[in-house]
Image 1 (cartoon, one colour):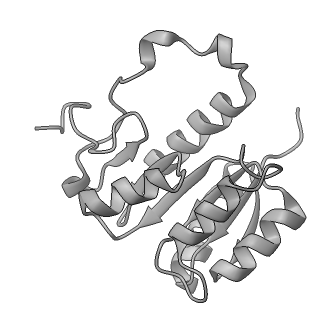
Image 2 (tube, helix red, strand yellow):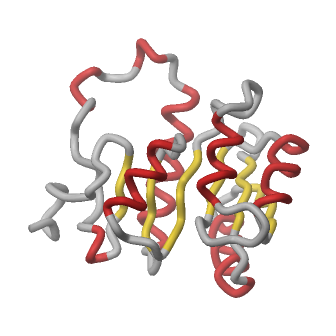
Amino acid sequence: MSEKKKILIVEDEVNLRELVKARLEENNYEVITVADGFNAIIQSRKVKPDLIILDLMIPHIDGYAVCRVLKSTPELSGIPVIMFTARTSMDDMRRGMEMGADAYLMKPFKPEEMLAKIRELLERKESPPEAAPAATQGAPASGGSPEQGGQTSAENPAGNGAGPAAR
């Protein structure tokens, strides 16, 4: 089997950080954790993870600024970033996507939704651009609405119109 994928979790709440870490390790991911924005940038440069799960409200440098730095650094710009936050307004989501986030996952979250989004982003990262089906552009992301804790993505920042839970 191939080498474990490395995921960097940037979360200042220790219990949540450890919960997400345990769930990812159970699913055969190598996990690195940090609790603030400054260390997120340092570890990203050092480890070059395959994916980053980034809280917005973190000490020293907020998640928006961290994402902007990562996406503007050539050797890090291709790393998928999932914004992972309790901030649910459309303005917050729009700003996250403007900073370069690849997906937006609301707290509280469903672990299976997080795992599905991680797999999707890692597969997309490994697929050559011409292999990506053109029909999926603009297609709704899986998951419920933001109000229901559903996930969103760059293709569907509102998280609506997907699945039976969407209204």
